Length: 302
Image (cartoon, rainbow, N blue to C red; front, top):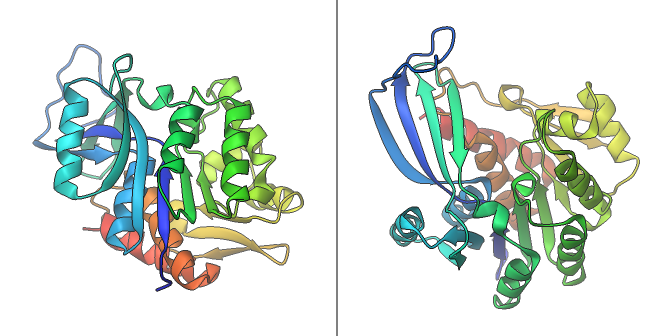
């Protein structure tokens, strides 16, 4: 492993409740109690998940995010100590810590709910000040960008330029983009992607990519982006594996077979973590995708 790799993961964190054993049938109906068998409480959020997984994979990583000065925030601090994850947290009296609820049936299908506003309250000054306090950063993971609503397009551009100027390798996953996602958020992300040549790796999922770029075909979309950037684009295709462009042509590396996924929530974060760790250690993209497919598949199958 290369010496002195120090990563920072910036973005979202949630106090997450995963409730298992629910029955969905045709739909979850209003005014009806849907009772599960058991639940687990844990820390979640794209950026935090990546920080935790990178640490497990041997990369010294600090998470930067915001919590509210409330009970869920205090629980998160307690869990951070238990998990021994390095974190540089901004605590706000004016924000409510984000919580998430994943309702899961026996087939690992899920319905997701979330609330709170501490993630979207994170601002440019918070991030840049925290980064300047950490010496020797050479890798940045920017996750869940679509949920960091207080960052303007100019804030995002300033951050990316700062990281690039200071020779930090940048890995970007803007997170879920829906057809109904606020147009201002979409425009902010598109503005950030105009700086793709300053970003080393762009790591969206298939749906995120197509919804943001307004395309229906993954190959057409990848080739369109390939014409405007030198950054490496790796698209997560779920059970189909991952796609990337090599010499102008789309290639797909298939995922490993998982007979019965236990929980697919966070599978993309597992992929991102393994991909980043492998690239930082060995700098081979194709091998990194194979490793990330295997790593994510083996863990969601537990």
